Length: 320
Image (cartoon, one colour):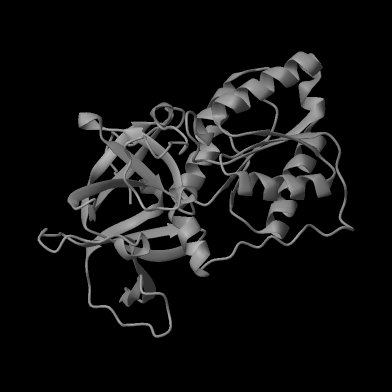
């Protein structure tokens, strides 16, 4: 789901578009409207609630399946997954947000799909709020990737929908390690990802390939790490830093903006960048190429990751 007008987001702007949706609930005896968001790049479409076919033996928040143009879509009721009490007096406008990530399509029932918001990644903070932050939620905070303020100083929570899907067993990444007998490499790899789990997986794979790994949690810190490496190696940095592996969705500075800045800096422009993201739409892969990425990988297949990293590095060795 994306706009096709002239206002579509250009690479390097450090902006994202979110689908703003609402969940109604009762907290402390009062009606409360939870405000949530998901990246537009992960949304295929938003539809009215269709007739669902029940699935026996599943959790109560998996409310059924339906056929969408020949594709069977499982449906999760987010209010049930959040374990919240929904006010009976409130008139709801239920919709299903059809999301796609890691090449999996799944529907999420929300109480209202409000609008699409364009937000700068600089205005998105990591989900490190405390219980006194004014955010009313029953959600496991590991399922919140970021928070941002909107009008009237309200808080919008960006949900990590793919981790919900992974917990339910609909999708499991392939963490199989690279073949121990494969060719080994030397040098440094810079890894950017705001998920500690994702960084661990990528780091372990790169270490098995022979690399020393430097890590960053967002694009801003990634730039700082590059500056530190330049202070150490100077104009020979490309001889030591062999590859950059970057997530796309990160607070403060996203992967596309980071890559555009790297490629615009002659000190770093020859260092290859590979994107590793759960966003699996073709448009994002094209944006990655436009930003200067040499490959765009959907998280996470260990063997594919190894092969693509090896191919990119070997191509740079042959060019140099």
